[in-house]
Image (tube, rainbow, N blue to C red):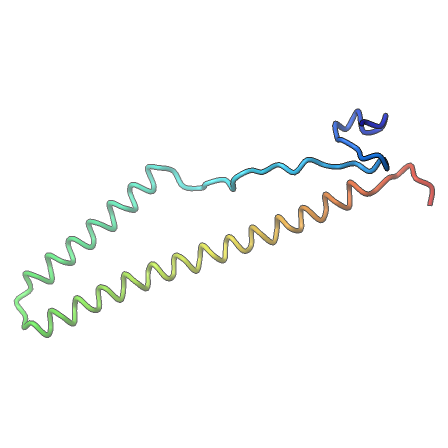
Length: 117
């Protein structure tokens, strides 16, 4: 059912004439392209490969080589952890801004400038 005022806004109304706004379900926009993702994967594979070859052919004892391997693995795991923390912080900020936007939209939908005070 549409009220005369909501017809020009394009929103559905309930029997009590309060507008019910549609809630669009959209995925968050991706800021990375396929080319960038491919470049990142190739760079990771190359750096890990060159580090592995460098450690294997380095003229040092086995325990020194093992130390370098552990250091490399620790650096890689730290990078993954840092990337996850940054991603989670950005998602949290995006989620909070979506909640604030929904609150604003609800207040605007409930406001009726023609209703007497």
